[in-house]
Length: 264
Image (tube, rainbow, N blue to C red):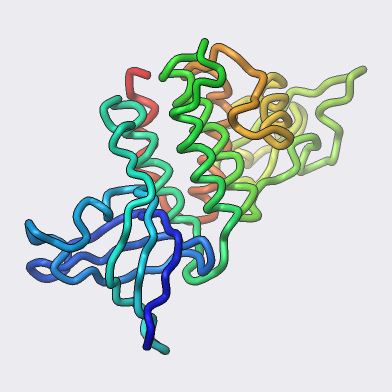
């Protein structure tokens, strides 16, 4: 059987036996796949550094019918992320992108939009656009943008302009409502419904962060008008989006505490 060759992004690797690796990767044309890279852990491996986290590669692999794992033959590096890992916060952001992608993406289901999302946020971490933000601002801009679109592309983004309980409009210019969310609920609540017994503890999603969400929906990451990004910018929006991911995937993201506690 001839090898397939696909443009791909490496998500995660796991040791197998003494010298092999199991590699989870997102291919542009076939979605997320897992494969075995034989002898990849040996010093003179033919894979070299091509299997590093989020390496953009051209992957060659054999896919046999009725086999869960493909056999990786080789990978040619298109772009490494080595230049980004010298900054700790950026490195943790890469870990978050890889973990969330591996968690959210279904196996062997075409996901070119998600592939392009990852390329866009990786490019934005290098982009001079919005240079007034500096490396710190670029990290939080990329993390917020990725989180929004990861939830949306997974089909889990709820309506952000109406209360999920009573349907009241939250962004009415004459009588704007405050919006709240809590873990385990799929949408936002107005102030009245927030006080309904059984809704649990909640957090507010500010009007400013909802405006940023609207901007993210309309603009590429490098063209976001919001400036002076910091950890505090849209922090409530990120919390809401991460809770949506974790609730639907039924698993906590281990990189989130590391990211939020970084010095960025």
